[in-house]
Image (cartoon, rainbow, N blue to C red; front, side, top):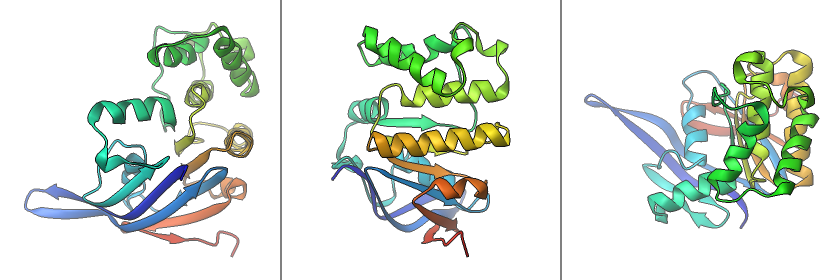
Length: 228
């Protein structure tokens, strides 16, 4: 199946003589066209969950399947390719390259994939315009506000048209107006381009844009009725 699937995933960390249970038998399916949110207190396992979904961490037990590929069965170079081509990451901090302008931040991702076409540049400009950055294409990161840097990073996550979007607190540095616009954009991309998207957030105002909401607590994931 396309999308992302967790099958009884457990993640243990060794801290000295003790084991820390970060994920506890997590099962979840996110299909194409579906946008879900995961909420929960700090230290509940949300970051570990997202890193495991993005093929950055391997589970101690269980399976993670991305677009019908079992991540446990992929070689390191195949995992790198999968992260580059099939997963778009939106992080809390923008992590922009300091010497590249806004447009180049997106185009360098296409070059890393080994190809850069004229239509890629046009698509990059469309993405940036949709996020209110049309006037900032030639600006360097140091010339941008925190919100502008984050919006650039969000556009960068979309440039390869990945099938999976993983967003870690994507609105943390945005004002309320831009936060709603950004999450609306993620939701729109998920539907119109048939992606599977997971957003970890503390901002419950953003949950209205999601199809399902889950709460993570002590490594366990449960469905959450945020309207109750």
